Length: 592
Ligand code: AMP
Image (cartoon, rainbow, N blue to C red):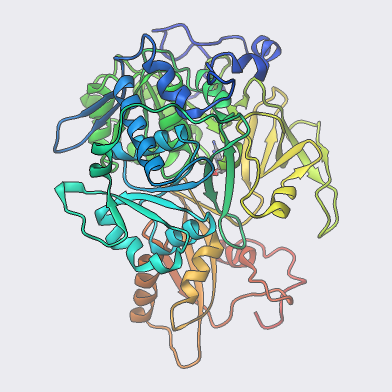
């Protein structure tokens, strides 16, 4: 079937007037100062994400509206109204106070999508405590590394995760003063140095006055991966709430009585910014599915839970598409109004799949841990060009730039005005959810900016109509099933195996999950490549890193290609793997 080049902006649901329809006019009218007026602010003049997300509504007409609805396979759904959430987050904030944990201290979360995680995150924010969510499928190594780098003082986790992933590494986390355990399945906690969260919560008061925080006070610390070195802790401030509120209106078209489902796990930035904070700021009801992906279950939930706005990811959409159109048609989705996706490139085919089987196009949008919120998006205000990430939201100015600096110099860039030329995607600094630093790494932060422009590390192009098209990453980080994975972290874990001499890790393109992690290893003398050894290295990596990060493929090489200065040339490993031209190999050490 011949498809037109664009999907008209009115092609989706006509059930409700969208929040905006005129792109240029809204951009002209917009200012962050005006956007700030959508929030209440603290009585003393400050701003606090937890207060805005919960207490502002709990003290008003939304008091009895369901804020979070947790659905589970084998148990009835559990609902928390805004008033319930206010009480529980107050209790949690009091628990922290009773432990001497206050403003600026750091709390880590390691759990699946359980109510306690949401309560702890919001309660800690109200207490001025800085929160770091960790992905519960991480293995012991990434968990310990991040707690250590972030000098975490408190960890909230479950009994089971603690036993499996934290306990053995506890000695490596000297900053950790308190571990608060959620006893799942009624399990009993008798670990030394750990406390039972339910007991503490039961003894805590329902009343709490939000700690005075300013727009520039730190709120969240999200770890993200770079090409080299340890993960980077991107620091975000309470003022980010202004961007969360506005972008949820523009890019997700959230309206007050929506039933919204964000499928991202809160262990990643989307699951925090748009799975917890933004929908609560908008006063909607959020669905939280506590189970893992299951196509039939997802269609059932979309229909039976009367989801109106759905925010998901390309890997999930591709998995749904793989099942064909039949399962979709087992249900009807009369309530569904707006669908959006983020995290990886969304194939035009997937945008059309939405239009053809759900009757709604999928609105791709782009952002990253550092930007804290959606920057570029397909929205209800203009036609969709399938395959494009859309146009910059109001308050966001995006450019394509080329680098002018010499190797080793501070970034200097030139804006490319000509359409359809590939370059690095850059954003004019100044939006409220922009990260304010990499923890303990001022130099790395400085390298992200050229004057007024934040350099995203992504390659893109802009067409003559102002739509942005993703081209690829400018660095070696890997995106697998929407999760950003640093090759260095994987290489380091592989090299802890007694047989591995060196390791080089790349992202190998995969039609379902975008990229899979592939490792090349050379062996120490005395070891020979064998299937048994490959399986043993693979098992070691899974134990250390967790299944989400460990390599899916491992290949043996006699020597890895290195530059003369000793750096493994991942670019070359990838070119060779894909049968592509090797490019400039002038720095390659001879013999590799
Ligand atoms: P993270 O910081 O883990 O959220 O990953 C951010 C990175 O994911 C971006 O820098 C992009 O490389 C990629 N990404 C996010 N959204 C999109 C999108 N809509 N299209 C293509 N790549 C995306």
